[in-house]
Image 1 (cartoon, rainbow, N blue to C red):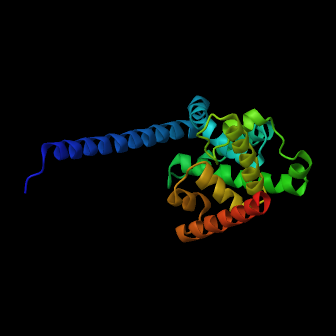
Image 2: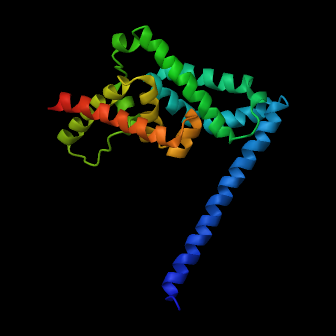
Image 3: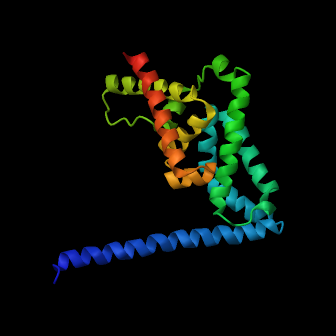
Length: 219
């Protein structure tokens, strides 16, 4: 059986792209591994490279837990400090990034609980500058440039964020990791040390709670 040349060319291109993609991942992991080895030996510059590489991702994750820039910066610094202090405990059973995000989610959830107990979110109302919130928020995509539609989209974004903030910590972190930061189910299960089935069911429950909250507000 023969295939048309266009199909064969497409298959070859996909194979090449597949090889290049996984080669880049392997190279990235190898690079992290060598940096971690050097950092474990006391090379602070090697750890600074890792910090610079993952700072934005960790900061974004921290911001989703606390919803305010200054708190997010403090939390991010705490996360990288903890990572540096515990680096010798990293055995390499997982990728360095997975280990780092585990620290970030644990610290983020603990900080969220602490701030919630102190009434931080109720008192502050999460009223950070709207433009900054809109720039960082990715929950509700906005495809229109119509001013009225843009305003409505911003209002919905605020309602969605408020509904997520009102979730309990376990459900909030699932929504943050999956629907906002885009981690896969497999990655989330590894980060939170949960079965993948539990991850999916918890996310489904969280989404339903958010949906019900929005229905009550928007109806």
